Image (cartoon, rainbow, N blue to C red; front, side, top):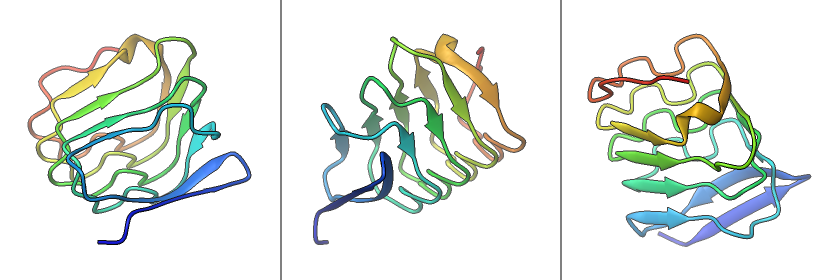
Amino acid sequence: MKPMIKIKKWQLVRAKRSEDVLELTGEDFITVGKRAFRGATQTTVVLPNGVSAIKAEAFAGCESLERVALSDQNSIGISCAAFRDCAHLCTIENSEQVSVIGPQAFENCTAMEQFVP
């Protein structure tokens, strides 16, 4: 798979990488765009400081995703179906930073034991 990170107007619009852990540090965006990671194969995604929104279906269908690390420096909103069908997702680090959770944000995330914003 050809590695690709596409950022447009402070929004991550596409992230296609082959590595298991994708650490996005120092990237110049504040929003993870709609369907940016949809169907990606990463097991872990670490979002940089400054990200304040995860748009609809941003990680939907990421069946291998187990862990997402949010910034601990600002509040973040999670839109509808952002993590839908991420069956292996069990950990959202810094979840106390989440200020808004949209409908079906974690639908079919069967490995998620507890999420406390």
